[in-house]
Length: 470
Image 1 (cartoon, rainbow, N blue to C red):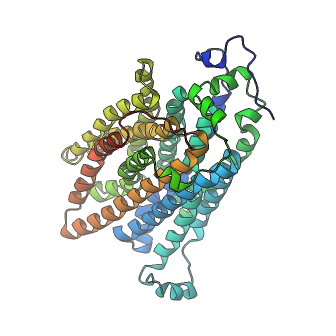
Image 2 (tube, helix red, strand yellow):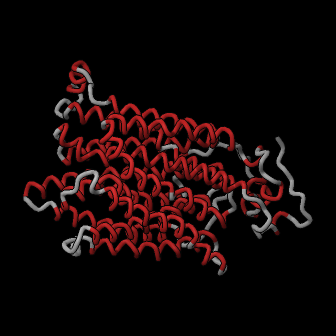
Image 3 (cartoon, helix red, strand yellow):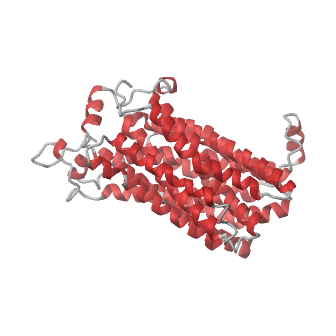
């Protein structure tokens, strides 16, 4: 289908007022929001079942860290290839395959324990025989889940770049990224209840099947803007109103493949990768270890921590949506999109410093660390909404999935490092009788990571520069 032309008197470049433009792009944003919600529901089941699973299977913190790291490492590698695959398959097919794979991966956790004597014998040849069978079973299930989940953000960011002009992208990303918050809120409110009613296996199965419902709506409502019959000509023109991107589309063939080697030659790629490497592990830590923290330090059971966790993750929605809106303040003042985003990110980077007070004030009530960590986690979501959008600010649409994949891999590897260090620290200080010291060390890193990341990113890309020669 040929590109639609706007039925308007003024040129496309003059279309800057969203009034009367149409709102179908927000339907697409809502689909991305629900997919991201499902994504985080699926990945959080394990962390909420950790207290009961570790009692059932006698796991140590290091065992749990191995399981979490298996997800993160596979997710990191998967992100690299997911971005490339989604660039080639297109957003519609790529996203569909991602959610099919991760939904199947979520369900098979319920059958992940028996690995068989023959498999155990084989594992001995590669040095894994000493790992408990239950740990290995969950490691394989987590790896399968990670392969599919790696496709969520490359596909969602690519869809956002297809359906939103630059000035709206960080806000759109903030909205769909708040699905991580909704998933994190719903998980503690539903998973412990499902476990209590039907057992831990049912929690994995029921939550895992939700993704297949989303697929129905995705295939009904999503098509590329040029093929979308529900999109008005006016809204189509508004979506494509960025003059610099139109110029690149005219100068460079859209279907030309861009190699990873080529992308790694740009400081913009490295800035995004470093930012993800330094900060993704913080969110992973909050997601995977907070239930364990509440149990270790405040002796809470699964049902006791549902409300505190729901409150904490509810706070992060403010950060996700507010952080996406925040750069618009600077863009309206005349900043280029990237420069306004970086200014907003510097302010956001100071907010997690409040996490430094979580342990000193924890003796007052468990609500003190819950609220302070909630502020830090909210700042992460604000940061995340903006760092993703820096890619679509600086790269043509055909390369976005691949660059997101490279940066996502770096973030995943950073998450592996944080998880493994955390598990080792907690076991070490638990043996010494003061596990709270391990959490103090980890919270300190979580507090300062964003400022370190921002200064490295700014040194790599001091000023906005759009990539034109891909």
